[in-house]
Length: 106
Image 1 (tube, rainbow, N blue to C red):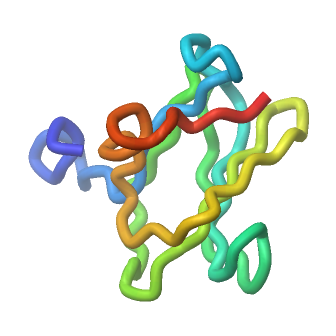
Image 2: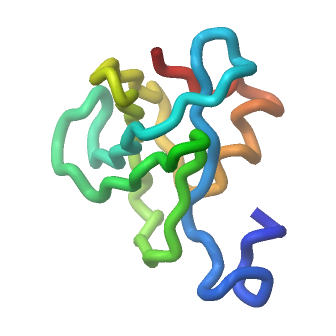
Image 3: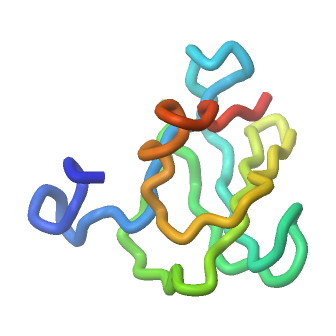
């Protein structure tokens, strides 16, 4: 998130990424990203971040990533996709679309 760190944007993004449809080309707007303490939506819901009208999500809110989170993404249609591994940072596009598949939900 080098383009969106403190100084580049007001406050700097602490979580950010892009959600795609199953074709991995078309963005998927108006959903929600959930951060859970456990896999598959188990344990506590730590945070929610809205996906905007062009498929991007971001926040400047400070979160403690030391214990990690299990993200889930819900589309505007209500379909949900769960990330099966824990993440300890909010720079979602640093892996997704690079070394991991894009974030996809239909």
